[in-house]
Amino acid sequence: GTSPDWKRERFTMDEGLSKTVTETFVRLYNEGLIYRGKRLVNWDPKLGTAVSDLEVVSEEEDGKLYHILYPFTDGPIGELRGLTVATTRPETLLGDVAVMVHPEDERYAHLIGKTVALPLTGRQIPIIADDYVDREFGTGCVKVTPAHDFNDYAVGQRHKLDMIVVLKLDGSVPAVAERYTSDGITLDGVAMPATVAGLDRVPARDAVVTELEQLGLLIEVKAHKMQVPRGDRTSVVIEPMLTDQWFVAMSKPGADGKSITQKALDVVASGEIKFYPENWVNTYNQWLNNIQDWCISR
Image 1 (cartoon, rainbow, N blue to C red):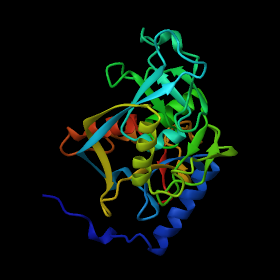
Image 2: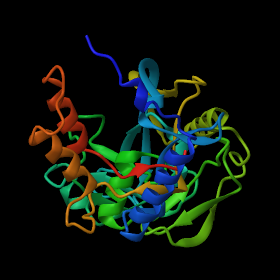
Image 3: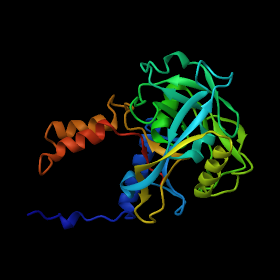
């Protein structure tokens, strides 16, 4: 068996440990490895705080897949009125800034660069191409909502798309949504439809679906099994939220030329740190090789 060395026991708020934390923070900040930025985090609307990935429990639940028509801005193209997008979260379409298709999808290749009118608002958004799209899922057309989906955020960064925050920190829809560039620069806000403004996210979904149906833009609704992220302390659905937080840059080289991630990989590869059992090394390496910047302001 194993046993800790109790002579080295420490508490988070011990004076010596707190001093080390402060010194480390300042050193990393001075090296440019700690920064304050506007990025997506796991947000618990009930706790009113960002939570770590370890505090998010995803379980399969019964949901719905909504097929929504986004009409072409300049009228039908051939036999198509527009693009049909499949989504499990129709309430977030108010924050859409693009519709993406796979660059090699022959069904839509000729439409890349065209624009569609965002349902309920009429705001023009472009049709873009990105390898992230799974051609076999849904219709092969995916709405891009960088402020409310982690994958969409990454797409938005690649394509320099704006971010529109259509939910407040309490999970309700604002009268005017905040809007930012992909670099986090504040732009003029975007007015939300009066039928949705002020509603919590669940009633807002119902209101959006009802209005889509009335406009003839709700093409189909299918039963759909989906992974729903919930906070392990509140059981509330976790919301990807764009907020100002403090982050540790995990992949940026420090003063010695190596990133924090690379150092962590090296000490295990060299045998300086060992895993028991050894099969956990693969899990550790996979985690670090896919790690994002670490949110530390929780």
